[in-house]
Length: 278
Image 1 (cartoon, one colour):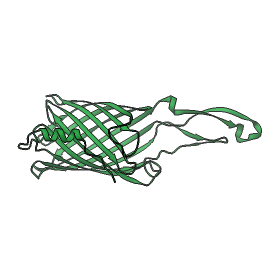
Image 2 (tube, rainbow, N blue to C red):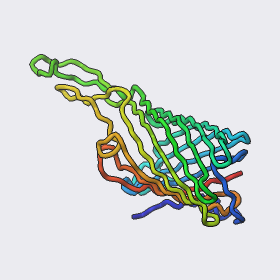
Image 3 (cartoon, helix red, strand yellow):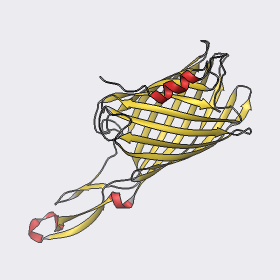
Image 4 (cartoon, rainbow, N blue to C red):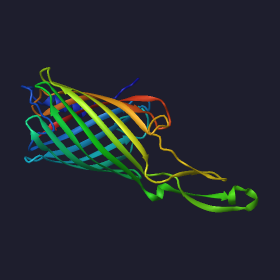
């Protein structure tokens, strides 16, 4: 398998910074701005993608983030033939509950091809010891599809009988989706200059309206499928960060993903990127 997951840009940035004693940067950091670049590859779809985020944390722990994503038009092709993408904005605020615990409410809006996506929720993080930490997170995600893409019109037999002639019927073919997203993770920092993180996620999704599939005779209601024709999906992520550089934190991540909602096949999504602080 030809994996083009290492970008020239990330190698240049990592090589240009000077190593020094580890600086432990996490979500409670104040008054910092960083640029995140990430390249990803889906192993079954053989699809590449790139994302860029600009994040700013104020001294009073407000977080502002803008992000962009782009995707090539063919398999096994990176950095060329881009055909589309997405953009988004994230607003957050961290509240320190005590020396070991903080909570971060968050709101996000994503602009995607043919739809808008809204997410809101909160993260609760607790430092378990000098080397261990853990968190829980809940978000509600609502995907609103453009009405021009959601409705279809077709000729149907009146009362399902061809002898009665046909009539033109407009119906909702693509429904809006509401997803409850539950997440928990644990991180370990007991190895100098390294941070390891494991994340377990569960999504439960359903239509918020009533889309249908219609033929010449009748219409049937659609059931939402997030994985293998089910509404719920449990999956995993694993992330490694190197914190021994002064200005940049490179990372590698591997995620478990479904190939499609109606398939029982899964795939890995490989991610390589860095956070560049300035």
